[in-house]
Image (cartoon, rainbow, N blue to C red; front, side):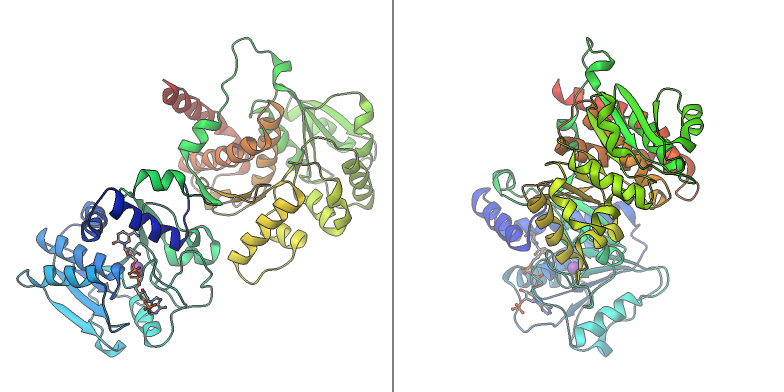
Length: 514
Ligand SMILES: NC(=O)C1=CN([C@@H]2O[C@H](COP(=O)(O)OP(=O)(O)OC[C@H]3O[C@@H](n4cnc5c(N)ncnc54)[C@H](OP(=O)(O)O)[C@@H]3O)[C@@H](O)[C@H]2O)[C@H](O)CC1
Ligand SMILES: [K+]
């Protein structure tokens, strides 16, 4: 799914009005009905509803929603927030339609002391500002937001299109905004929803299709995408009935050190569970028994240094052709490991997966960047990202830096988070849609490294491997949390659910081809 900027959304709106064609007021009605339907499905008419409407089209939506809910038997109070003098045409039209209903209380609020009381259990509809927000909110609107956020007990805030105060494609990190429980947003995710700095403002985003024109949506060019199942199904490569283990490559996981052999076990096991034909683990000698006993399907190559690896650079001399290599989980930062990694990276010619301490080694010696093979995949978490690329003032700026580095280094960078951001060498960014807070647990990243290496090994191109790998990792985490709970699930449980996820993707990909 494409993620559009505020101005592209305005264009989509205008294109739909001109080419469907449909009058703007009817498009607003369609959007408002989609919201009202959602509210009616989730809350019974007994609950009081308070609509806070601004003076633009977001407010127009609010007034239409109020009318539809009143007609459906809800008790609705409407407060128009006078944040500007003039009102949009469709706001005025919907106000007229609302006032035509008997018993429709409409109040105009000019100052925070005029705000209506919010009864316990109310559904608060926030339709003050939407995608037309073009500057951080200040002045008395700040107090209005504060009043709404300190809502009465058991009430729920449902924001329409955007939590008021947020800008769709710029940072409002320190600006006031409504903190929604749910955001019912039209047609596509907004960039602001993808960033952790807005997590407690957006609440749960719900995307409601409102039939914006297909031609516009198909042809509009954007650098931002949301990876949903429709993208994943096109990436999946079914295995050939005539294949053998050689078809799917020999993968190598370079991982582990004394006390961190779990990282090697998790990455190796997830690599095996992601379809590699053969998997070898390269580990320090101290990990030999652990690895062979816990994963008999994998081969084991030991580094002579003992408790850490110091001869990684000699791997190429073994005469084994690895189709893909993943390096980093648990390798530590012993000076010999650092030296050995530095030599090893200069010898690489095909894309590799680089994670954890291998990233920290690069951060400590930025001259290594020139040796990272084109189209390699780096998987930093935010702290590792900062060590590699430096600090930014907000997360929009961080996205810009992420994209610039992926282009400059000609690599894929997967920045881990609720919606992991995958930056590609062409400047585009894909946000992964799967995963949950239960995955914020030790070993989860090691599992991802194994999955990505396994997918590369069996012939996925790096872009397909990183998009599919991130999705599968998150979806297996979702299945694990459904089974064990977010609290009790562990990284190993993610691996345990990879099979269910591959089965389901295989099924939907083949159904779509019929
Ligand atoms: N595009 C669609 O698909 C559809 C959108 N709908 C709804 O329309 C809104 C967008 O409506 P718009 O009228 O463009 O903008 P807003 O309602 O968000 O804002 C109205 C005006 O508010 C002023 N403004 C901007 N920032 C601030 C601020 N920080 N403080 C106070 N006031 C602010 C600004 O006017 P200025 O003259 O002051 O610049 C805005 O123009 C969209 O979100 C949907 O809810 C449709 O109904 C359906 C299709
Ligand atoms: K809003």
